[in-house]
Image 1 (cartoon, rainbow, N blue to C red):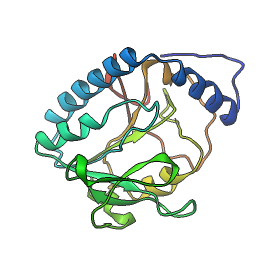
Image 2 (image 1 turned 60 degrees about the vertical axis):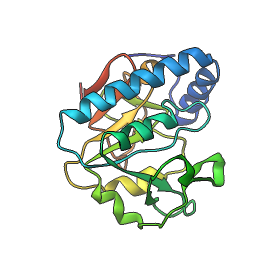
Image 3 (image 1 turned 30 degrees about the vertical axis):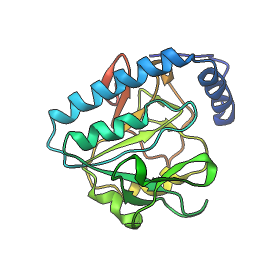
Image 4 (image 1 turned 180 degrees about the vertical axis):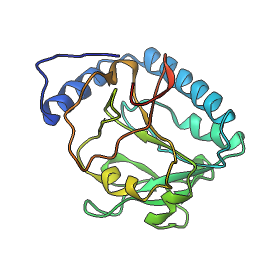
Length: 199
């Protein structure tokens, strides 16, 4: 677990620090971490009776890789990916059916081009892998600030594991949290694998 800079207190300061650190990660390290995340994710899923997962397409410096989505499909899992409607609405979802099913979208994202299944489709996922800038030991997740997941995660199935995906240095002791924050129940990092929260 990382402490980062103890003088970092606000969400904006955390975001700035974390994004700067991600930009400094070299390509070989990022690739090795993506491989470790994939291995840990598949090992965890093999031990849990999950048929459908909600995941995401990593963009920019986000942990993970598009190859992970193919690995999930190869493992026989249905993969739901988010579709951004606008800044005020929860995410909608669509099935991932292969690399050719992705198209460029707003905010530099890649999204599935198939039929939109609506916001409530998140409830079909038996486990959710959620992108984050950081997750703390209590399960508080720091996103990029648009609020898409804050509006979407309350619609997840009751008891479905909420797994924040971060680099090892981004699993921190404490983040600024708010009452409306939906807390992660697990965190996934390259070295630690899947860790139950809170710890």
